[in-house]
Amino acid sequence: MADELTVDIVTPDERSFQGPANGVRAPGIEGSFEVREDHAPMIAAFGIGPLIVKTQAAHEYADMHNDRIIFATSGGFLEVIDNKVTVLAETVEPASEIDVERAESAEERAKRRLEEGVQEEERETHEAARDRARNRLRVAMGKVGTRQS
Image (cartoon, rainbow, N blue to C red):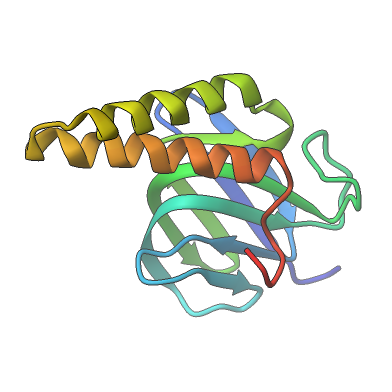
């Protein structure tokens, strides 16, 4: 493939992915969006949701069809310039590395705290924790990237 994207995904702690791709789909603040080759330059914020890198190259994180890598992310920014996509994420975790039991525990803990009743200023924190856990579970169980998700 002559013209493809170069994707670089970084968090404050590490570089999570670097390599060629056919496209990147991100959970935009106002709806998901996709970047493909020759996309106009842009900077966009994204929120909690699946970050999907579509690739033809074999990669340790690729799913069973070996054509995409799915990450659970908690938000950040994405920049596109000259077929280079840079993702600056708060957190990013490949589906294959998600600890499902830990994510289930985090979801239950957040739900329990919300049901117990919390101060208004704490509610948003617990709702975000619940949403992050649910996203990690969806990504780990492969329930993203289809029309139903």
